[in-house]
Amino acid sequence: MQTIIVDDKSAVVSMLQRILKRVDPAGTHTGYTEADNALQDAAHMRIDAAFLDIEMPGTDGVTLAKKLQQLQPLINIIFITGHTEYMPDAFSIYASDYIMKPVTEQAVVRALSHLRYHAAPQPAQHSLQVQCFGSFEVFHAGKPLKFTRQKCKELFAYLIDRHGAVCSNDMIIGNLWPDDSPTETRKSMVRTIITELAKTLRQADAETVLIRMQGGISVDVNRLDCDYYRFLNGDPLALHAFHGEYMTQYAFAEETRAALWQQLPAAE
Image 1 (cartoon, rainbow, N blue to C red):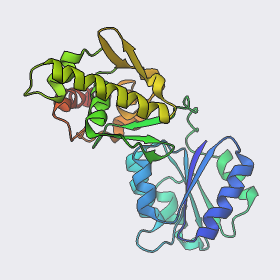
Image 2: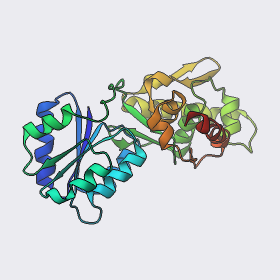
Image 3: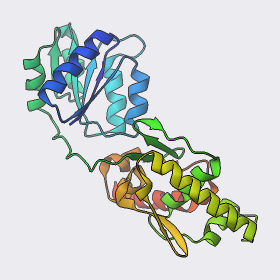
């Protein structure tokens, strides 16, 4: 199970993480003391249950819960608080449970056994997480992957956009340097970029994502956790996460962006 804990007190976050690791040792339990950081991560990672403090400076727990539900409609909300007067607000947004402080392990077990939405099966673990909605970003171990040059990142984005289709050097040049012709100099540059990209992926234990063959290169779509691919597979969270922005920094993505818009109404 994937859970998050959001409380402005780090001691409460640490305590809940310890409890969750005992009751669900195979799960991932991430803690936050800042609501904005939790929202940022929720935009690109699946969350089964969120343990939220109702009283926090800046953003109260009920407001945070509503924002999380907009990102992930099937998220289970479990409020933690020291005051019962918040119960009506909490259950008005269909929270799964309401835990009074001090939090006990028995209360956490009870909450997890009465979730409103069943926890999603854990997907295959991939070393790379690819974000296409909004700007294109690649993450390894929760941190942005560092590419040796911007063209390496752009090439990887283009291969992701092609969804496993084999791309020749001429195709790559036409999309990464649309104003240039496929000269030998450009083809040599493409070979260099591919080599550097492979090295970067190797360092992230993900070189097998690239499929290199005579005449072209592609990506293995089954070795990536990618919001765009989950959208194509009908994942409701990915469908909900798309708001019209797709690889916004790359012109070659415009055709796919338009196609996603066309698919969205039928999907919803």
